[in-house]
Amino acid sequence: MKPYVILSAAMTLDGKIATKTGSSEISGKEDLERVHKLRKDVDGIMVGINTVIADDPRLTIHKIPSKKENNPTRIVVDSKARIPINSRILNDDASTIIAISNSAKNEVKSLENCKNLEKIANLFYSGNEQVDLKDLMNYLYENGIETLMLEGGSTLNFSMIKEGLIDEIKIAIAPMIVGGKSAKTLFDGDGFDYMGEAIKLNLENSFCLGKDLILEYKVNYKE
Figure 1 (cartoon, rainbow, N blue to C red):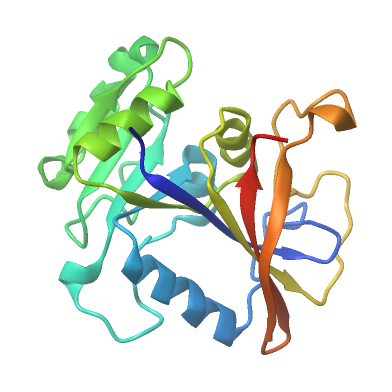
Figure 2 (cartoon, helix red, strand yellow):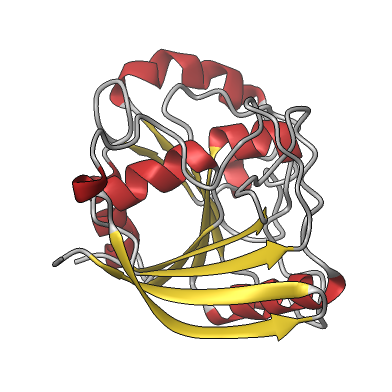
């Protein structure tokens, strides 16, 4: 069993989720409020370690009125145990799970120096060089996370969809173009070699929200 996974992201019209310098202020005010309402409805939020290092997100509900107990569990996929000990998610605003590969157990010593480590819900070990995402999904489901919001980054997004683990995609497309061959796109990783291997999507809903266009897809792994 696994959680129902919703990939939520904002991108420019040319598919970029950040500029080549890492700037990622894409969503308008209305879309940010939509995303935080979605956060309030799910059991967990998951990001990759590159997102934590680049953006230092809180992964809490703070763009709409909310109580601390409404914050979902925060999950970081951190195969090499690289999370900075001063990260904003290493606090008691919400429970936190850090997923680490078995090969990086020795690297966890740096995490043990974090004074707030005892407030982190768990350190989950799985996989050899990389975290086994299917194993992680099973672990999360067994620990009460039935709905999971995936907020990137691009490498984790691709790994999740390649493994057949994303159920739904909610995308905000902002009316802007940034270009840049080094700018991050919505999905990165190795990619597929042929268009016939591409993951198919079914458009379920679309609407304008402020200046942004919201597209909501169900992922169709059967085609």
